[in-house]
Image 1 (cartoon, one colour):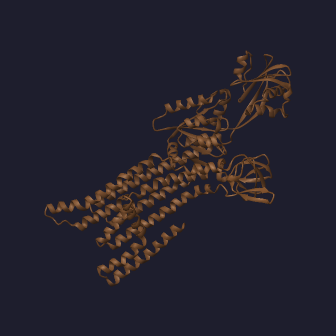
Image 2 (spheres, rainbow, N blue to C red):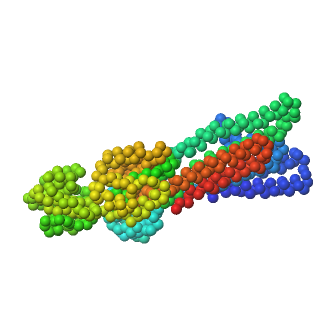
Image 3 (cartoon, rainbow, N blue to C red):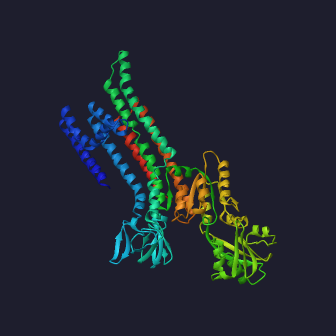
Length: 623
């Protein structure tokens, strides 16, 4: 508990003890009216002085209509009518409800506040005087820093010396340690578990992964959902309306009774109006709805799923169509040579020619061919390299004209090629205009990809669509293996955007389309979708900027987890709205008719708020 919460708890305990003493004295000696008033005013002011102060400040600042004003007017009015016990009890139970709500909010904040500890306050660097601690903002890119066992890595970088294990749970939600050695990339916010390491920084402190995440979380409250906007507008008009309604209830019936010659019964009708005020307090809605979203976002962040705000969480809950990239999203993005087919020469020589032609490319397929050769290309053997976008490359190797690329390149050069019956990416090779064979490149499917698609369908997604730049001959087998409903291949980034726009035009008005990509290359389509989800975005600034939802590791199963979080949160929001408004309306009617007394009013206010808050914090529990 915080210091403020502990203070409130002590006030509650003291007030309860004082009320018990007051009840005992009232039963034993039947004190006169003025003595009873003084007795009950003691616990009333102990428990309610801050509410009265806030109500006065609201009046001074011309912000009259809030729950503090309602509680102050209702309890002071009850005491003025001689209902000392009820006035003190209403204030007591209201404070109990406020304490309960404060503890619940604190619990939901805890998972997010842990993210605020991602960045250490210092960085260790080696100087002439030994190891010194400096401010992280002072460390330049390319500096070498030292991270001891048990410390958090303060800035993104690459290990230059030392072997260790890293705890990445704060970023990815993954509890298993990750082994790291020289050459491995490390991200700020992870914990160095076992060995001392030296890290060469690759980013400034303000641009590091942990700083980006903290900025994202701090801004998550800026994007309000439609539900939160509705509740804010509802409270803005509802509270003044019930205040005027209470005045009308206190004044009009007695006047009408006087006109018809009956006793006005002012005390009875004023008491009904005060009860009406207590019942009308909109605490349950104003507190529980934002708390539900906050709990959902906090619980998801603990699992490595960052949702930028309640507006995106609400949109995610309405997702019925999920489109996704193939490479790096549903596959590992690790290309390997799976075979050499129809070669007119020794396979090793064909690989060598392809590697020489691809030596100037940084494409993953080119790197996989070079890696399959097992040696660095002899660049002196190759010349006149020309890259043909979307097709491949041509070059002169050992005086022979070579063409290495896809089917479009072969058709462009008029070379008759042979199709491959295996799934994967096919790289055709032609030498001096004659077909020489092809190399099959396979991208490994992620172990959890099929489980991820099944989980999406269990979460209510009706349509799963794979959009990829790979040839359909390579994409279709992957889509079939993981269980995707549709697949579209050979798509450029702009083609993916158009395809997502088509999916958006085909959906129902209240539904949304989500696109899942692996960050940098998919940023345009991530930004265009109703809900953009960046996959495996650890350390990717482009993904964090473009996406509405950021999944920090490479596990596609967490896409369904994000959907479950969103739908659970919205279900709880609607439950609280229906329950709170329904109970309020019933109790308001009973209070106006004189059937409900002050004790039922306490339940309608504090009881409903406690139940709604209890329901809200269920959003923290994520499976």
